[in-house]
Length: 413
Image (tube, rainbow, N blue to C red; front, side, top):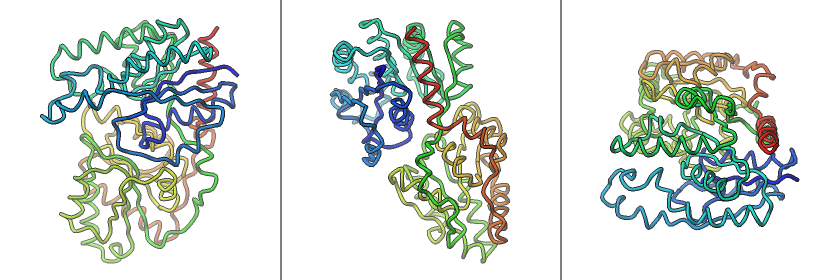
């Protein structure tokens, strides 16, 4: 087999959306004649855990976990509640870098690794990939799951900090033999700011793993009309518009109140909990907290409609293409997306006729969307989506991994 070193801060037993891209690449790379060696962190500064994902790491994979100094680095800034970028660039995981460079360079030499793949965030991982390439002279592929310097959710305390990270970003891109990104928006942003990347950049979206759906009963009937939300609610994202619409509906429609159930799983934040209490929706809204990926998929399978919240206005809302959208699509359950019209996920849903897109602050239109699907459910006309199978296969993790393996073949020549 060919040998590839995957650099990833987020990796099982960690859970959450950041782990799945690297995990699924790891799972399927041996199918395309690449043995994956994974370099990750031993003591991550991250709370979400899902040990069940460890079972997906193939026997061909070799996982190395390296110590990070970050817990000690962060103690004082965290205590005084100050923006960590005053001290740590490109991010708070910089304490992993020296240990990972030392171990990674030894691993490359010992195992005769042929190509490096560095995925971000954490952006420290991209610096790690760049330094390892410089030391070992082997090809480097860098991966952007999010924008870096132009990320709307990153707050720079001063122009100087953004300037420094821009220099880091440019250096990494110049060093890279190839660049993969999860959306055309990221690709276009990087080409606009760094025209030299055009010949060596490709969009490789996130996706769904068909094996995750093999044992799911996507046709099973739920006792109530169930709407499910899976994942995190953070930053400017909020369930306020949806829950306000639901409150109005249960007041106006006693029958719907008896039949509707909304379930949130994941890291949905304190605001969601407060809103459910403030609006007295405890009878209809269930907050389950963070669950394993398998339980999350079971919830999707047992629901009638899936909820997507991208409730950020302006440029921030445009760039979000949450990873769960692909599992939503693979389930062929209709989606209520509360999101800007020009958002990437909104465009995808509309192009596949996979549900309804409602502007982030329009409570009345959200009410109409819920009522539309409820009436279909009541009349037994809420059927699975007729998504074109060829379109869906574009997001199959096996096919995406095959494309990545071809990129590795290309940079090795």
